[in-house]
Image 1 (tube, rainbow, N blue to C red):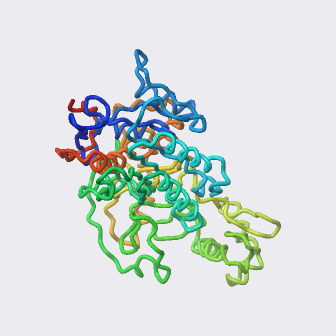
Image 2: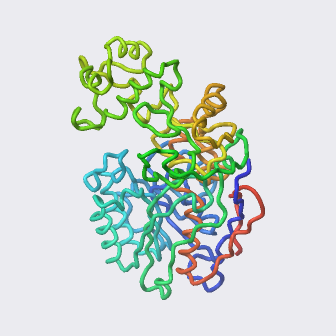
Image 3: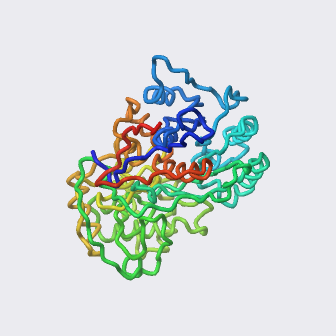
Length: 477
């Protein structure tokens, strides 16, 4: 399987004047190592890992299978970061994806009140004790949100006081050769005693942009010329704010969302899939458009009573609502109140939450908690807003011309090499890839950082065709 933007990842040769380890290789410690996304990128740059820290047994098994030689290896797991003190030898770079759950919605955004959030205290302690030349730490973009900005400012201030120039930026995986809209904050620090520390700049986005079909096996590879529309033609008077870079207000979406509690020109409802009359569709849409209004209750989505609906729909009868209950579109939540059976966005409809088309620029952020997302195996060339959704239902959904995103697909969408040995269980492998760092982002960021730290140039990647090749590259010694 080849991926777009294949390039050879060139190593950094520090040369005889480098004050790193013998042979011109820089050294690094891999904290919160997971399955080794940081390590792949840094080893491709010519780095030597002196040790890693991970506590999850399943992640350790995958990490060791890919990186640790069973014979003659002196490298071991440093264990829980809470127990790491002064390292036995000096190290050039310390990196890690600090647990992100305390700053994300999935983790209930408890910040430093979450024990996992307090692991930042150990990160700062390890930096203070070992004084690496530089560091890179990755986290979710939620750490930059206003409610967590004091925590971020505290982290930056504490690291700066240890003698480092500290800066941070959101980097998106799509900008570095992956068809995935994945924003992550990267916090970078360089010792201020390094003369060129102030010259550091985050890497610029790559010119080449991938498509989803470049990373997914078994789908049609086809470029669709998309028409531009006045937003009012697609959304009427309710033009949504653009959510993510792959959803534009003047183009037909390249994905279809399956939900009864959301609406849009590519939202598929259960009443679109079942045989329903225009009157039944009107009733469902009325409930959809009013369920979030506060006059009907304090919840984000409220069941509506027959009396509520009767005031919104002329000549409504209870029998009409019961017919929708029989079709399993509606149900009675409380006595006399109606809501949709499919009331959770994440659950989708019939086990499908979203189907992206293979010609799409990319997919949304992969997650460790799992997704009910699928990929169409064929493209859809329709550019008529009036028939677009129905053509999708008739030509892709009903014939079953879509596939789940496999664990290997997850790996490709995160930039892991084909030869990477993932966990045997699909669900575990998807979780691990979804929780990993995007390899090309670390590669380009690491290259920019190391050029400043060691005052040398690194050869630019060599492009030669389709796909990303992360084949091992031996450093120049």
